[in-house]
Image (cartoon, rainbow, N blue to C red):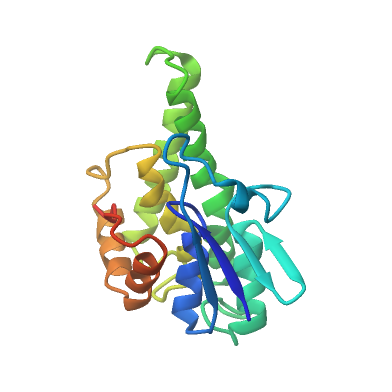
Amino acid sequence: MLTVHHLGVSQSERIVWLCEELGIPYELKVYDRDAVTRLAPPEYKALHPLGAAPVIQDGDVLLAESGAIVEYIVARYGKGRLVLAPDHPDFAPFLYWFHFANGTLQPATGRNMILGRLDLPADNPLIKAMKARLELALGLVEARVGKVDYLAGNALTTADIMAVFSLTTMRYFLPYDLAPYPAIRAYLQRVAARPAYRRAMEKGDPGMPLLLT
């Protein structure tokens, strides 16, 4: 059986959500972060040489990297669901937004998080440049979901499953305000209304307030 190793408050929530959307059987193993360092516990780090979340096991397959895991699961178990075929008119936007999540949006939040821990002055050129990069990324998402219900069009796909973490749970690590982005807030409410998303978050991070506004 497919085993999802989920580190609390991490990108591995994507994999739990994917499995719930697909309705496939899986075993969920939840690991808590160290109360002091907020890092993964030793038993999680021992799962894979990278030592980071997410990680899955499927028979003899041990796989890390959330994008690779999402593609693996939909290829093996998705039966064409949550992805768009090459002949679909929205195939190119689907590919763009799927890769935008970890290629642009998450790196922008991660860089701002790291710089924020360095106690640099607000007018530092690098701080200003990285803040502008995040605002640009959020502006692109805002424009997109102001036109369509989901990133690839009017149906949820794995592009959304990849992107939502950076707009929600990542804000526990890098607080930022979504008030200037009403379309993103409306988009997150559509996500929040999905039973599979609610189930996934309750299973993976029970009791954690969801940052959906």
